[in-house]
Amino acid sequence: MTPKHFIGIDGGATKVSAGLVSKNENNFFTLDSKPVSVTIRACPSFSSQFYPVSIDTQLDEQSTNSLNLSIEEERQGIAYAEACESALSKINAVTPLKDVPIGIGMPGIKTENKSGISVMNNGPRMPRFLDVLNRRLSMAEFPIRQITILGDDNYYCGLGEIFSEKGSLKNATNALYIGGGTGVADAIVLDEKLVNFETVQDRLKKTWEIMQPNGQSLESLISQKGLMEIKANTLNMSVDQLIEKGLFPEVFLQDDLELAESFASNLSWLIHFRLATFGEMFSQKVFDKIVLGQRLGHMLNSNDSLWTVVQEKTRNRITDSSKLNPKIKDHYLNSDFLILSLLTEAPIIGAAAAASESC
Image 1 (cartoon, rainbow, N blue to C red):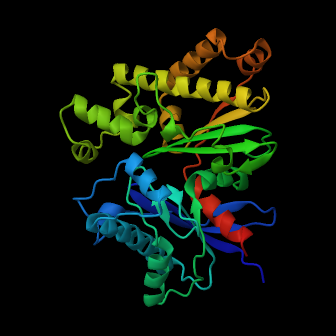
Image 2: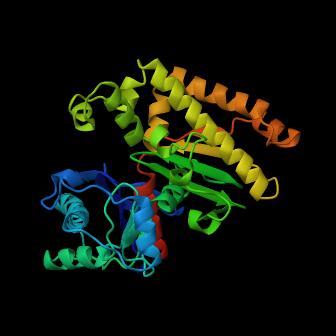
């Protein structure tokens, strides 16, 4: 009998979120209740002494298949498994789980067997992640199926936007998803099909790989983490102090007009860069929509003036662009292709949908 309930787990840089998801007769997926979240910081193995290894070093070690993990990096990886176990425990306390398929998405470049992470921009490498998690769940006697594949959180964001009735990528021909959280999630629909961004990486870089002309990482200028770090430096405070005071981008960008202007300029730069690169690398194709989701979507939805500035700057960049031909310019200038999504739970729903596909 095909299951009607699934669990989706979304692993982020700072927390793990999970939810029980049901599949209806129209093959859409809906959260059965509010998702549960567990911060990595709250887990027993969390290491305050851990700092991510530089990306260049991670990529070098990945290329030679010789990951050199410190004790602190190992501990931090275990903390992620503890967070997943804790999230499942919270769901099980409300709705007892029995033989429920689980889908889990995590950031980073996965190992060849798709059971771990060999490169992670904002966190620890975890080459044996599923082995550790499945063993913990077995020892805790969770009556659930073994998790066999560690999925991509970017792809699951897109999948959630397609398989949720509230999703913004349904019925898209060519579309791009930009999700803003701790980092930036990238998903793409090509010729009516969601494809893994890894399959087009020879033509489209992920946002964390894109550098501004001055050499700064674009992700560090538009992501929640990046904005928090910029604001903390401005106030001579730590990010933890900002969090304690409840100062998040959706709050301080309301008043910090200089930082808001910088954010809008950099986001519009990314959007234009995507439009130009897509047209150049995909035979002058155009996106029928670009969806801005997760915390990015909520932040812009709650700040009308900032959203207006982003749209205006994007329009001006298109108008003045030397990289877009007149026909492509007309397409974007005469369509409302920028869309805000408030589907924060997209990666959870996407992970559940992926679990359904594997049944």
